[in-house]
Length: 469
Image (cartoon, rainbow, N blue to C red; front, side):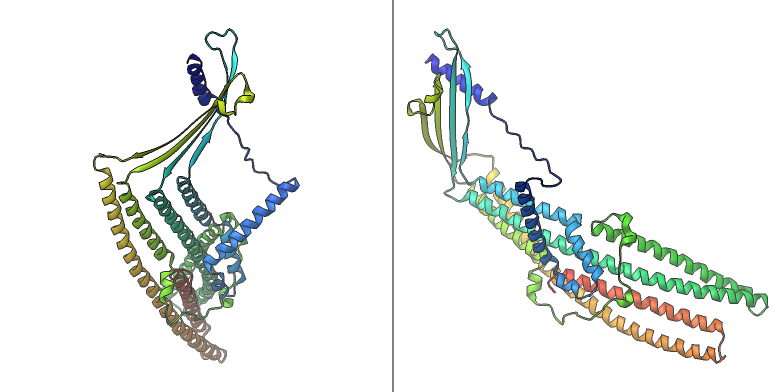
């Protein structure tokens, strides 16, 4: 009995203090050196490439290709690879996946084993002797009511919702890249036109100044011409400031340093292909495939499973356990023999009798959460319909408004050409011709602004449809 007591104490302390510790070196090597490392590196690179191709489907790159703008396509591709919001969304999805794996592991048996060597001096023996113990234990919660299976399904729904969130993040970033890019293109054109307007106003001011000296124009008119020139120069500074801000925004969206804005290339607004591809109607399947709609659906399904789990908390928990124990004194070779083995199997059921109303309150809580998510799901459906219809109306109206402005621009250009002929014939003064030219440039600015306004609303329709347009 004394030997068994001493051995039990030895095993207890040996299990606590003699557990082996494994250290894994996770140092990231810059370049693979060995053949095995190169093989792993290439496999990892191939997996990342395949993963990136799968993410490309989120943003519907074919839709962006319709603009026939190589720079825009390049920035969308760079955002897919480098944008930090997209990377955060992908990492978040992986976190939810690991949570799912953790919960799935709770459905499986838990098995543990240990090894405890020690040096023992037993009563009645003058010399110290070596002792060895090898315990093993297994535990399993018999999921006959499928409570753990339902918990795993609940976590799985959360993981599936995170995948939808990832898709939404990709669509949002792609939309932001396109919007920023077109606004930069608009700013380029606006600056170009404003510089020409300032040039015209400079000529007007110079002519007014000369005429004032000859007494042909009043000082008041000369001051007004100078004010118009100063206002135009202020407008030019504001336009350049806005362009720099948008360029920095675009740089961050594609994962570049804001200091590299001078390297960001873009097409001119005159070369940009602007087509009316607004669909006559949007099928209901598009709305049902929107990320927010799909996520609301997944969360509603999760809430339904959580109610089922809460109900099963009222049922007993059944555990199965097993123990295998090997021990030996002096002779290590006889450790794994049946004479030195102790084993046991057991089962037990536990049913909480009184928990202060926690289980009932938890069930009511899950039902309330289900009702809240149901209302959120119904609201999401209505909001999706509203956003899609609003985006369609905005894009259509902007297209119609753009056509009217283009006609007005064409008429203004004809009017200017007609006045240019009159100037060449000496019918009107150069001052009048410059004023007509400024009127034309103002219409050009309005046309450029409305072109990009239409494109931005078209991107809004793309986003409202979840990129499925």
